[in-house]
Amino acid sequence: MGYDLTMFRQRHLHKHIKRLAGQFPIVSLTGPRQSGKTTLVKHIFPSYEYVSLENMDTRNHALQDPRGFLSELKMNVILDEAQRAPELFSYIQTQADEIDKPGQYILTGSQNFLLMEKITQSLAGRVALLKLMPFGLSEIETLDKSYEHFLFTGFYPRLYNRDIHPVDYYPHYIQTYLERDVRAMVNISDLASFQRFMKMCAARTGQILNLTSLGNDCGISQNTVKSWLSILEASCIIFFLRPYHKNFNKRLIKMPKMYFFDTGLACSLLGIEQAEQVYTHYLKGALFESFVISEIMKRRFHQAREPNCYLWRDRTGHEIDCLIEQADKLIPVEIKSGKTMNDDFFSGITSWNKMTGNKPDNAYVIYGGDFVQQRTQGHLASWKSIPSFSN
Image 1: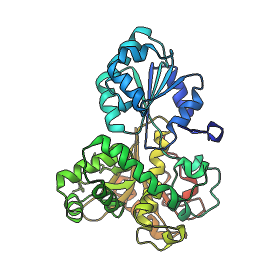
Image 2: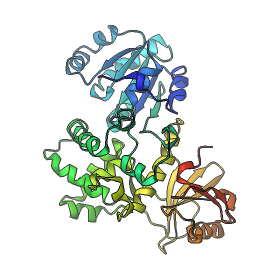
Image 3: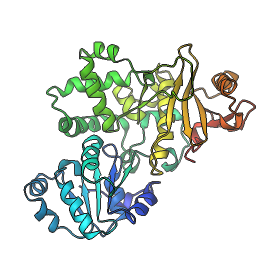
Image 4: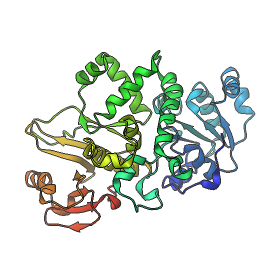
């Protein structure tokens, strides 16, 4: 596949993969295409045999003679693009049970839905499930540029390891995603229509999901909208921040907000061709919000944990951009793209604290400036030092 391990950058998920491979016979690593999964597992397990099921001859062998295929492999193996041959999983389960040794199989795949569906059917209880996303801020070597630069560039590893310009990278990424992943997930005869749908989703970044409006603008049914959204979500292109409903009596909205995991991809779909265009773009605030929430979620994924983020908004307009649930508390986080501190930044936090009795020490505003302060209403945090909420 041409991966250059000399260009490897340390990933936060590294130690968790290694730890869990010492405890489980199978480790599954999913995530979006080109997030660095293959490079990472090859680096962690250099002595493992590497087999890509993207190769048609290899895949045909695995499907036609699964027992024979597995018997020819080493004791420890990396199976890349494992969702291409899900029929293997029941045979892997049998072999894992017979050998009963940790770290036998490392499965990677870029189609989370297909892979997870088969794993839950065949490998439950035997597999550690992990997700690798593009770089997080703390995995970037330097943050000496504006946040608009990072919104435009995005965080896919090849952009940094190969110094590729986003305008050159993302159109090819999108085309590869459409041709390989989308075609494999669902029978869409007109991929151009699906790409237009992706562009309409990018234009709704940070908005409450409206299936009717999205369907009308794309000329497709609500059922098709739901199906296509599930494809984008399963392949880690978009995510939904769902409403938090527990312990509240107010009338709350029930629909989620839609975000892109990578703002560079969203910018490409929006037709943005240089970072300077982000400064005045009408979606700058929404892209910044998408970036911050994605960063919080990536940190959870890269610590081998599931996200614990929610949206809170009532029908009177009160809203918290991101509500983080921990065992004993809820942490409100407001997100502001402005670079100069304004007292209005804390208006939502102040209302929340008054309504819930939350303490200012347990409240945050993440903004587009550089300073970090403790204020009477809560913490003011810079986009460069987004707090970790993983405790």
